[in-house]
Amino acid sequence: MKSAISLWGFLGLAAAALPEWNSFPGHSPAIENRSLDQIYATAKKEHGSLVVLWGGDAVSQGQSTIDAWKARFPDIELNLTVDVSKYHDSRVNRQFQRTGSAGADIAVLQTVHDYPRWKKEGRLYPYKPAHWEDIWSTIRDPDGAFVPTFIYNFGSLVYNPKLLKKSNVPSTWEEFTRPEWKSKLVLTYPNDDDAVLYLFSIIINQYGWEWFDALLQQDVKWVRGTGEPAAEIERRNSTRSLSFTTSAEGNLSNIDPKDTIMYWPQTGAIFASTPRPESAKLFMSWLLSDDYQKTFNGSYLVRKDLSSTAGSVWDHPSTSLTQFSTFMENRETVEWWKLQIETSLGAAQGDISLLRGAE
Ligand SMILES: *[C@@H]1O[C@H](CO)[C@@H](O)[C@H](O)[C@H]1NC(C)=O
Ligand SMILES: *[C@@H]1O[C@H](CO)[C@@H](O)[C@H](O)[C@H]1NC(C)=O
Ligand SMILES: *[C@@H]1O[C@H](CO)[C@@H](O)[C@H](O)[C@H]1NC(C)=O
Ligand SMILES: *[C@@H]1O[C@H](CO)[C@@H](O)[C@H](O)[C@H]1NC(C)=O
Ligand SMILES: *[C@@H]1O[C@H](CO)[C@@H](O)[C@H](O)[C@H]1NC(C)=O
Image 1 (cartoon, rainbow, N blue to C red):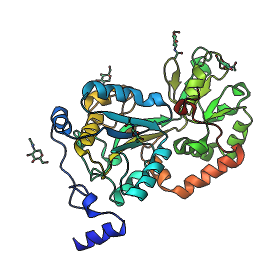
Image 2: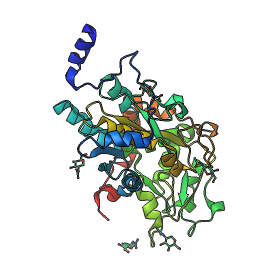
Image 3: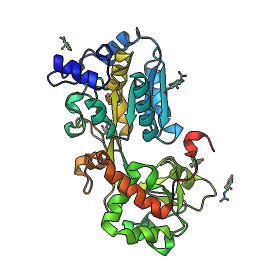
Image 4: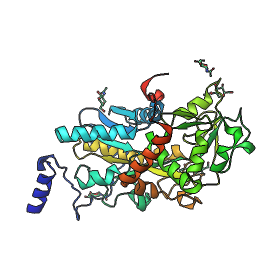
């Protein structure tokens, strides 16, 4: 115990702030065996609203989760805020440094490199939600410090079917530099979003910087946020018909290119400083529940026992789900790519309009 205390001292943590379970070897928590209603009954006795940091770049990306929670668990107020993951995590890091508390109960983010570090620093509350055994083991933490909640991708080609025929949509990255795509593309600044940056690193590794230089001649509309390209394409009078840094919404269609695209597990964890551990457990078990996971039918799922019309992520021909973490954990590589892009493209301009209400 002595060495444990000095380790916590080294990390500047008060032993009293630690949860009952900690992330030391041999202290892995048991898998949740209560029903959601049983956890809810216990969680209702806790006070205050459950603060969830939700990675995203359009306010609308959190709405269905907020609405579904309200309908299912009306007695526990949910304060879920959407912001880009890199701002959520930076606020958590600052708050933690100042106060020793994360300032939130839960974070569900794209910045997958945060979680192993937060775990090492004793900042996460180990919890194995219900259905733990059914979550792909390569993307969950073996001690329950963090879990994947759903799987997103960039690289799928999103287009306006009113402006573009499916048969005319490119099938390789190389085709994007053809004259017919001049002034038609809307893309997210790769130097503003590490997942988009990772996709660009894949493409540039395949087709070279010549590809990127040619893309820069295409009068691309560069925007901040990955919700914005879809919004732009959907705008009634937009001349932009195609993107690959966004997800299909509403009336848009999407199709995968033959080339490699990227996927990542949007990852969630409970902070060790949570004053509402039962409410936090309820939220995590609910995210992994059949009811919540079903809403992702058509995408790849993090639970191997549930079937999706998309099939299994491990059968995708060209992308491994775990490589994004490797990229993200190597911050020097990330910085290298970011600056290479920025040198040609310039710094990201403007606000993330779907988050900051500029529309
Ligand atoms: C549920 O798990 C707890 C330990 O976390 C254990 O004490 C209890 O017996 C388990 N209940 C059932 C029904 O398995
Ligand atoms: C929700 O939580 C945020 C912290 O993420 C806090 O700034 C805000 O005041 C909270 N809102 C409400 C209504 O409690
Ligand atoms: C499209 O319409 C909106 C308002 O309806 C307007 O603000 C915008 O300038 C228009 N864009 C173009 C390219 O005409
Ligand atoms: C989708 O298409 C329908 C029918 O054409 C239209 O009424 C609706 O406004 C469109 N939605 C969006 C978001 O553009
Ligand atoms: C997804 O949809 C398919 C087809 O409707 C269905 O067979 C499958 O059970 C659904 N999966 C889930 C998890 O609901």
